[in-house]
Amino acid sequence: MACTDAGDSAACFLKQRQSAPHSQAVRPMKARSPEWEALREEGQKRRAKFNQGLTSSDIREIAKSWVENLDIDKAQSASNDKVSTCIFDAAVGLKVIALIWSHGLKKENLSYLGVVVEDYLAIHGEAVIDQIEAFAERDQEFVNVLQYVYPNTMPKEVYRRVRALSGRKDA
Image 1 (cartoon, rainbow, N blue to C red):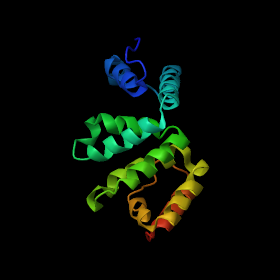
Image 2: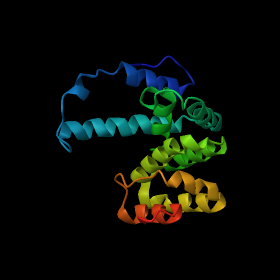
Image 3: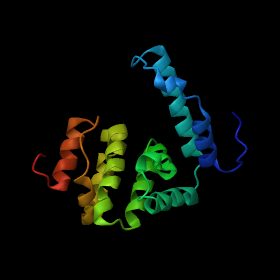
């Protein structure tokens, strides 16, 4: 499908995603089958293209929109989809996390950012944990977000470091 939203890669990506046939998603696929690998690679390419087309202004707007839409059902939120796509790029993901944090979240919304950080660490793990630790050292309040990070698929050592930062007893 050709996108007609020139200059708006985020809108283009979401249009393509929404118009994709959902029949494939209904039929269970065997993990690591050639069909599954092809879909995974296609998703990686779409996410990379989306992230490469982002400007600093786009990234700021995505973070702002995510914060403003916290009261909307997170599973249906277009801004949540954009943030979820951004975290697949380590540099863009860290910028988005930092910008979301800079907007000042209410205490009851820290868990939402915790989920984003959790997914980010599950994707990038050891390659980014030093940056998350440095971020938490610069802003001690950020450790409150880390209380909502669970192991997901991140390496055990990465999760241990997150738990140590957050002060949770299960570190």
